[in-house]
Length: 371
Image (cartoon, rainbow, N blue to C red; front, side, top):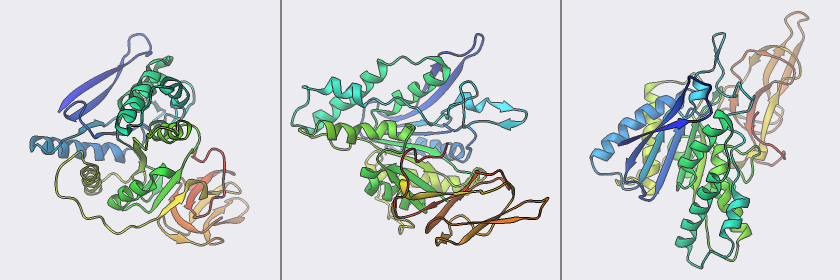
């Protein structure tokens, strides 16, 4: 294992933040797997999974079983880790500019296309290498102003040339669910089965440029634009939501780490017996079919259904009770599907997103992700 310390530029005078990457296997070996957690710095389950995963990977490397390159970033957002306001941890949004730490990553497609025009061949392997070099070159050409943008550039530099990118997150109260590109649904289902996920949500463009899409979307965009040359999907990227924010448990984290190792075995980065895939607990459904459950008024939130329940359109999912007037507003399911996430708060203001249902039918357009 090699430890790399990445210094972030743009901090205030007298301060310096760093990102630590643990590298396993031989530098430059394929496949390259990049795993990070803590981009939303107040989402703790993935940090514990990374703790268990690092131990597992050290043992695998000592046994000579890592044949690819594996990069693990166990705390991807030192800025957000330090954002404590009056005792509350603010790790999803940057306090400097108000931006979501997992939105607004550089989109490299246009610049990479310009670099690749006239340089591709009929050989897929050489084209994949050329695309990776073009993406890295385009990223290097973009100036990152300020510590927040410098962080995003630093993380993307580590990941954009990887074969596999897994960004570990969690929701508020949730079952395991996975987001990935529509073109990557087959491999996404393998990951979902290993993790026991209850929803696999797919989109070609989810909106607002999250980290996983910044790594994977260039491949199908470039294949469409440069269709005379074989490129193929050179990167499988996914966002993995590891249950809810308080699901921090050694047994669950250890099992999740083993599932990620099994996935890397199937990807070829680790040698060993091929794991037996558990039965699927979900199917791929469009992210545009994920319907939010919206509070129609302010009040006390009382849920009728648990996360993971299969619900039908019109089912009562929650009451919102005005403690002064005694008025009860019952919030019903806007679609049929898996009730895969819900809010941890038990007080709602009008318009608050109380939960999400993975429906089978596309019903939404535009920005599909939560703010």
